[in-house]
Amino acid sequence: MKHSYALAIHGGAGVVPRAHMGEALSERYHTALRGILERVSDLLSEGESSVAAVEAAVCALEDDPLFNAGRGAVFTAAGGQEMDAAIMDGRDRRAGAVGGLLGPRNPVQVARVLMEQDGPLFMIGAGALAVARRAGLPFESEDYFRTEERQRSLEAFLELQARGERSSDPSLLHGTVGAVALDKQGNLAAATSTGGFTGKQSGRIGDSPIIGAGTFADNATCAVSATGSGEVFIRWTAASEIAARMQHAGEPLEAAANHVVQTVLAPRDGSGGLIAVDREGNISMPFNCEGMYRGSIRSDRPAETHIYR
Ligand code: ASP
Image (tube, rainbow, N blue to C red; front, top):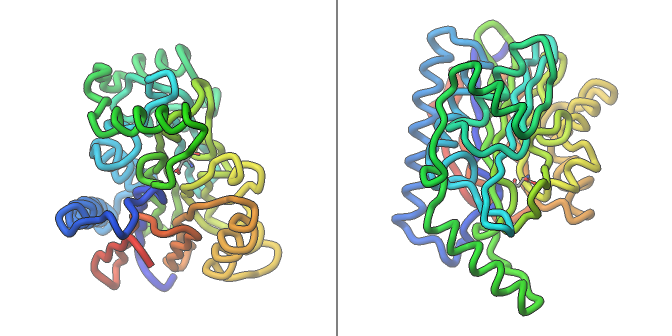
């Protein structure tokens, strides 16, 4: 193994366009990402598992209203919030996923509970909430999750929709959070969490909780967490396609991840990007849109964070 541990995180491809990004806001994003990378890499350096690391990183991103997941998730067309999340363990491909939740403070923790239980892998609605309650996970009121900024985004979205138009500002529409990690034991894991798209239809579920589309981990190849046009990522099984190219065509991580983002997804309206790590600790973070909130840290180098190219 080249590097003893590695961690990458993303805060989604729905970035504030460079022309509207002020210095203070940009600094808030960088500071949030850097803080999470540093805290979670301490866990990895102390020998914590990659599963614990990606869960901790995604919980922190869910708690931060800057990002579209957990607190600060975007609104559906009906003015609700419906959150999707997944987590996967590269040791044995165990996974857990939830869709359409509102209540648990950290949807990724509900996914983790499902992964640890020997039962259903993917749950929605009342059944998923009951699992979270039985596991004693923290719940929050609807007010906790709602932010004025997301409320304004929905209003702007509905006004434009009424005129038959659509906003071109990705930050008003979408975003997602995710983490991938390699731990000192050589195990990979991935986790992803999202509110989906502003103005999405109630009941719509994107790629984030779909294993092989928005989330994937297998020690034989890589761990991946994606963000972008969910329907396209699902149809082209974005995350597992990277693993398949590595496994069957012998491609290195960087080549496989770039191919999927630039050659498979981009020409098919699959705007977005992903973060990926392999067993050697190589990290790839390609995207085909203006930017992606992202950062990485490794046993051999300090945290770095980026928004645009
Ligand atoms: N992929 C997410 C979804 O389709 C949204 C995003 O990442 O921007 O729900």
